[in-house]
Image (cartoon, rainbow, N blue to C red; front, side, top):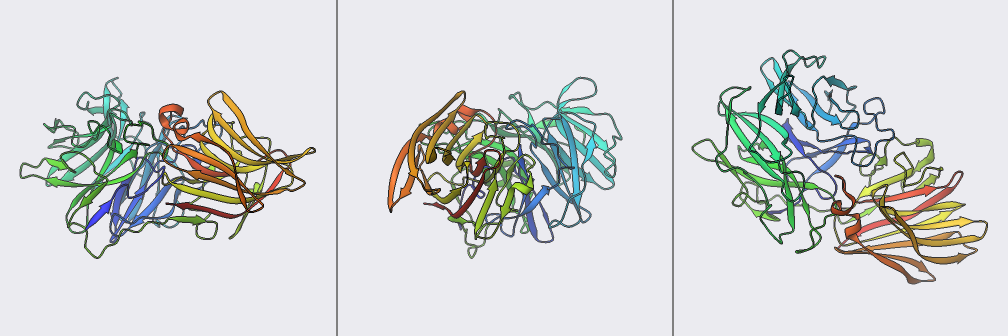
Length: 496
């Protein structure tokens, strides 16, 4: 059968995967958004359903005043002796930690910290031993992939941290994962930076601590030389053997805006690439070491159909799964109902690295129409296309003693400009519309049955290439202004 990439669309970077009891489970990075570390499950590797988050309590993760692209970095999920473990980094506090659960659908433990630096931690279980890895610098000052043995109950180190592999020479050695396959230890990592030079490399050895011999044809997977191809930035992978014995890599990548437009604003997404082992024990990946937008394979049964949800509303989404907040929310400012959202504004704006009244969905495709009815008592409320506190486009209703109007505002770095306004007169309700394409967002007000254009803006200014950072665009609903109250209804985001 044929499947299409990405298998999980939108800002869900740094995937890690495990399997348990006939089901596959996957986690992704969440950075400054809360709840942290979304969890997905699948029976077939191509259809994924979000089932929860690992970090659902403020006590588990400190996000206060965390800037965009800070906070929760790349997680690893593993299943051992009936228990799930997720290890990750709070890059803002420079702490590696893990949490665990015996019920993947339930709550996870409080954080258990490991006294080893670096980022992108990994857990490897063998018999009664547990090894912790990250990139960084070891106890002797040597850089590379750093490993120590830990007590899984406490996180305490049972051995010094030592550098076991220095990679192949590419910059930003990161994302280490350890596997034992056919009696050998395989150490896989990423190099090149999580951008257009990203790549997956690996080595193998006879012992868990090395020495490791690099694969002669590294990188094993990269799209860095596919000029003009939509899928770029391929790297940061995790290996999995499926129930039938086939090997796969789940990894990140991104879709650039156009063939020659090297910008991406949807964020880094989840891709699935087949892996093949040779008789010599080395493995290859994808199509000649690249990832494609679709693969034709008999590894997935022909009766499996890849599903894709095209329409998102208040009624068919889950507030606790599909939506997220900026940092730790003040929950009393949110009234979440099946067909309605009420937000209470504060004096914290979207431009502040704090927790404004904001709840968002990840943008999942280029072509879309977003509509919502907004009714406002005072202050400001509306829809934001949010990349970070310095890069977001807002379509909002604003009301004060002079009356009510709809504004289109562009926030690009230090430039913050209200481009267009439309007077609502004595009214306090508006139907807001945003239409999205690969290269441009269009902002409209529906009034008296007619769509009134309020302007357009290029998507590139919300891209990682302009804004920096590691996140992607969220479609946010927000309210601003102390004492303001806003009602949102008839929300729909439809992809074409």
